[in-house]
Amino acid sequence: MNAKKVIIDCDPGIDDSLALMLAVNLSELDIVGITVVCGNVPACKGAENALKVLEWMERMDIPVYLGEESPLVRDYVDAMDTHGRDGLGESNYLPVTTVQPKQDAVRFMAKTFLQAKETGEKISVIALGPMTNLARLIERDPDSLEGLDELVSMGGSYKSHGNCSPVAEYNYWCDPHAAKEVYEAFEHLPQLAGKQIHMIGLDVTRKIVLTPNLIEYMCRLNPQMGERIRKITRFYLDFHWNQEGIIGCVINDPLAVAYFADRSLCSGFSAYTAIETQGISMGQSVVDRFEFWREKRKNSYILTKTDALRFMILFFKRVIHPDAEESMIAELMGRKWI
Ligand code: RIB
Ligand code: CA
Image 1 (cartoon, rainbow, N blue to C red):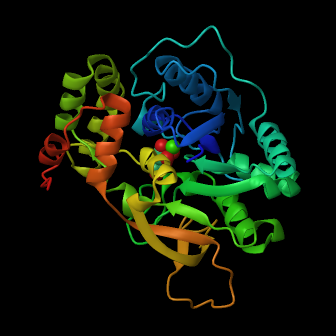
Image 2: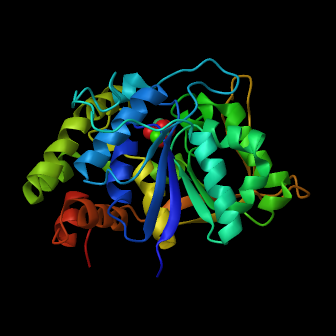
């Protein structure tokens, strides 16, 4: 199968970084660029972290573009309490000095989509952060969207409780106006007719929990990669213990990347979804599962089930070591490997 061309729009971030480690190891993906947006950390910090990860993975051939530094309307609220001041769990790895992020993620997206429109080789986007860059693209160059193939968005929540409020997930809460613009574009724009946002929300990502035992196994199989992952997730594990009383950390973003490569990892349903931008439920993804608003276009595909074990096996085999044992991973996850 030919690799699918993709832009990864992200806010690295610990789980974004794990997602990039996976993405560069998936031959199913041809990463044409990484665009960074303000989210977990300011965009400039996120771009610095994206370069660090690409250097670790020996993929400095992939360009990194600096994107929007603030949400469309709201004041910017970071997530350094979760990801650390450096965005990588206060691991304080030194920044890459040989390469700088390129300017203007939105202009890069527009140019890339317009080229794709001409050549017919469409480009997809895996969005792992607030959708500010995508909203700006829709505002400035909606015609370029003819070059967009698919959009997979880590964000939102159908039935799972929120992580920024009882109902809101961070990416859509940080910039609800951007999320609203993107979902409305998939509802109204003719150049997006028939396309849906594949929403990888908390309903499925909460099932992807990286535990100390799994990290220990990573370190046994691949000390260099395992120790890096241990170092950047320590802070994240502490946050999850203090915040949610769990031993382990929910790694949201890698599931969106894995799903892009293998759709059988998750299942769900088509629906009309709208994003609330104000009041106590600001950032909520309102999913019309039972078609109260029948006249609305089904602008989204909501993923609600996932196979966490199959995901973890994919992550281990592609990022850590091809000989990682399924039965060991299953045992460490308290599952049976049959
Ligand atoms: O709510 C989780 C999402 O918000 C993840 O993408 C995390 O990296 C943050 O961006
Ligand atoms: Ca993210």
